[in-house]
Length: 458
Ligand SMILES: Cc1ncc(COP(=O)(O)O)c(C=O)c1O
Image (cartoon, rainbow, N blue to C red; front, side):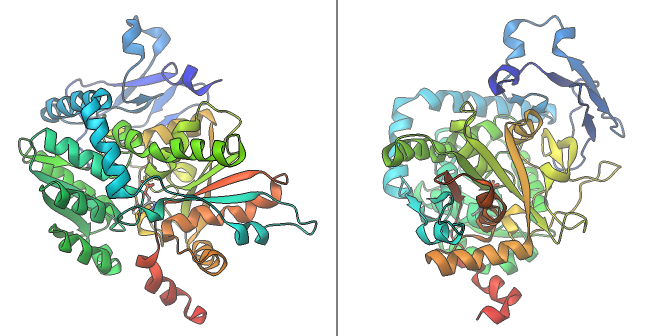
């Protein structure tokens, strides 16, 4: 069934205790979606959820097309006190989508500040590496998001949201970062727009990504260490934002959180896919055949995929972090191994235990270490529109090295996970298949990490 047709017509969930929303960042709610499309709830505690089929409800047409819902996923599982703030944000987001002045300013910033459009680079050596004994194989292209100002796709969204914060008169911007790329992008955008910026970051991530911490500080941001990792930093940033809704703006770096956050970030990242379509048409006169992206929470993947969701002849492949292996319990493969629940304000697949408690994710790509994933990607999984695979830490290290040696390009360790999947993909593809891999960021930040793990490569 076509994605669009089923997008809003499967099932959705209502909170039994109206008004008693799940506290963001504290508790998850475990739900399982049955093959039939029904949802069985095994939610513990007072926040039980009830499945309601759209067909069972007498609902006006417009309620069926609910913004912020992707099948059963997404939504606003937040306390009442946040609803008015999120509604204002949603209204502003809807406004800027059609505001010519905002769009013109954003286009200028993307061109002159971020450095778009980014190249669609033909990876000739990588292509040769995967040719078979007859010299046949797919052609591999890299979408060079690593060439953006700040070194990653994160800037596409950070600059646009910082412009929204400015319009809303929110001087205090708060954000959480894992690998530091979103922190760098947000800090730079805030410097450009004269906004005050506070970045929350896990203490061990601060140590591992110390170079990015220096950059954030150079841009004038305050970097606040938080015990734990990216998920804990996100919870802290949200708490700080909730404590000062009048003056502060929570600048989310990826396609998670309550509506409108997932839609907004996806919208600002969708420039990636739009450029790929245009560049593919110019280069070879048709769409690409396969798109591959790594998935932490999903912003670079959705930014790449969204433009092509309606083109069912384009394969969409997301690669999650298998860490030490899927059975090790130390991974971040949320879509491949997770179960449905509610976390940080929306419903999605999550890494959680049988009590619905969030599990600590692990990946050598720190930016992939998040226990949730974007609700839209959860829906793409259920509908089968996208495929999801995994890559281990060791495979990512090998792919990182391979790209450095073959192309002279250093991918972010996160992006290296997408490169890994070429190993399995390429031998299965017909000659001349056009494959585009999203090189979501640059990997200078990971060079010492690489040599710590692979000393023999030095
Ligand atoms: C370069 C890079 N790629 C990918 C990711 C993963 O995030 P997402 O899945 O939102 O693209 C990160 C996160 O920090 C990143 O820095």
